Length: 298
Image (tube, rainbow, N blue to C red):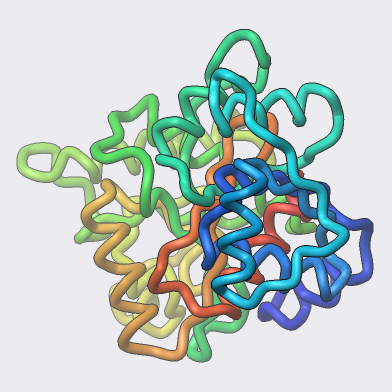
């Protein structure tokens, strides 16, 4: 169990450097974040993009990129060039710079590179909140808009795999809904949550414990769960919160980030290499945490 990001930083900074390909390296904010991580000894950057454009950006932004490799994109563009670096064993993770998310995903899913994982590609956010006793994952905040039952199963499995790589042997997963009882008439997400919870009981979800439906207060507070008469090993101790759709997940995530002292790291998982997508609203601290997280799960 990781209590906070300081423990994650300690683990990452004590390990091997991650070979990180920045796709579209002529993006000043992304370039600055990667160089900052490189200076701390956690990544070995490969800057994919027009050499002239990357150097001009570095000059304008005051970023020292001396000694870092710049790879000129091929005819297929930055994203395909970066994927080939992964295939060649030169990169272990990808990071979005000045290139569209769609371009990166299309390249990753291109059969030429064989980088597609076994199932769905989804997004995980690792969160630290001062009122909760450990880091936990929230998913899916940024990729799958309205997941059906099959997609929720795969989103959950992706998040569980991330927690396994972070050292949590048997993650506790809360399937989050508006209520903690199944309402098959008006709230189909509660039915999905109950099905996935029962699949866990039957050993169909891998090495984890899943309960749901759970309201978010029951998932993070034992007191709230006790008041509602919920007896569950997951309640008040989740490692993963699976939200019903992107609107609920994104709203909750941004509320936690901007109305409390939360910290976060976010990556796309489900492919054979993690992909870092940074928001311009992310703090320098959160950008660094996302880069470290990609290294720990790559």
